[in-house]
Amino acid sequence: AEGDVRPATLTPRVDVLETDDHYLVLADLPGVKPDDVDVRFEDGELTVVGRKPTAAYARTFRVTDQVAADKIEAGLKDGVLTLTLPK
Image 1 (spheres, rainbow, N blue to C red):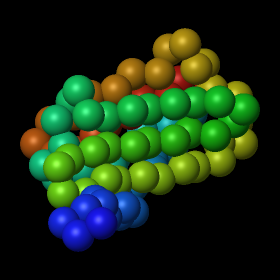
Image 2 (image 1 turned 180 degrees about the horizontal axis):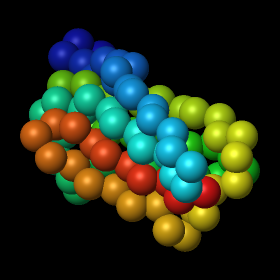
Image 3 (image 1 turned 180 degrees about the vertical axis):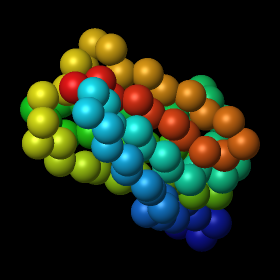
């Protein structure tokens, strides 16, 4: 229908850092509010989705090491999502 505009789906820029005991994932989600971020970890895949009125960000990663899924921590500040995935 005319005027029916779907938000674009974008791939956020992501940095993944690994230490002996955890992964640190940094994802650029400019303009996304904390309530509009969805992080899921299922069957060894980490999925990050962030939504804002004009676009959505989505990215999925395969994690080969064991991750303590119940201890994943997330924070969003200044448009950067920080995830800590304990091994």
